[in-house]
Length: 422
Image (cartoon, rainbow, N blue to C red; front, side, top):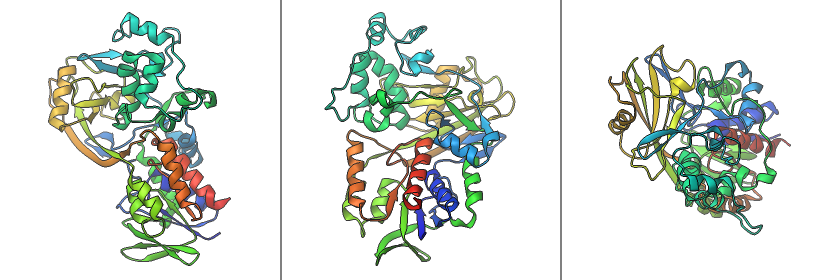
């Protein structure tokens, strides 16, 4: 088994490297930054445990949870302490019934407490229409749910829940790639029991550290790949310090970075990869002292429809959602911005919860081009990229390609490694 180079030390690249190493491959993981993990990162400040990126994994897609158990982190699994979330509609936070959160509007009690839907909206959503004819290849998130459950249900429930998570336009994001469970329900499997989301006691960064510990000196930090070149039947990867020869390559980097690296060896794939759009995202994390709200937050957070006049797209009540995230009595909130900065986030929180004390800690983090946009036709685009790479020992893995969340990135890392290990 020859050498495989993994470019990118995020969760997809680390998973690929781990599986390759476990299979006995000669592997090197090149990470441009001074730490591994990509958007998975956890810090401690003033006694608070703060996630800089994703704070959990979705268990109905089992790959991340299985990896956690496989590498001995099962005892670190943390279940959410709070249940339920709200939608901000007409300036008020309104709890979302759990069946609606599953987009299962015909379940018993689905509309109990859903006062943001009128009686006609509820009647329409309770008798969902079939959507796709067999010839349909894709549909936008908005169009799909408008046709299935009606205009208001799509606008106030489905769109913020599904499109809002990716800072995307619900009229442009495609169902086929983002949500195959709804697009092809006959292919969906029933989820296992237990909570839909889990985290880790020491934060999601501890998953990264556990993988890095197993990979050891296989991971090369501050080693940005500058170019990929053909060298006879092999490939070479050039960094600023040295050149590595390999028989195969896993590109676990965003599509725009992969496009740059592949210009010399796969120009058609490079041109296609360059076309994908990305959204940036900003997060304001605030730690509030005890008694800081006249109307204390409840549940695990809220989402904001695009039609609402609000600087936030959502907020996670981290210290309510997960045990041990803040010192006793204090409240840790993570606000996701549509525009503005920390001052605007505090204004919105004050409007909703009547803030009486300034936060003890404010942290502002921006992720540039962090969220790949799975626009209509994403699966056709991806098939074209893979066709352009056919004949080359190059695999793609990561959020730009076959799924955005942590579980899908883990799955892609596993699949990429399997291409070169049999």
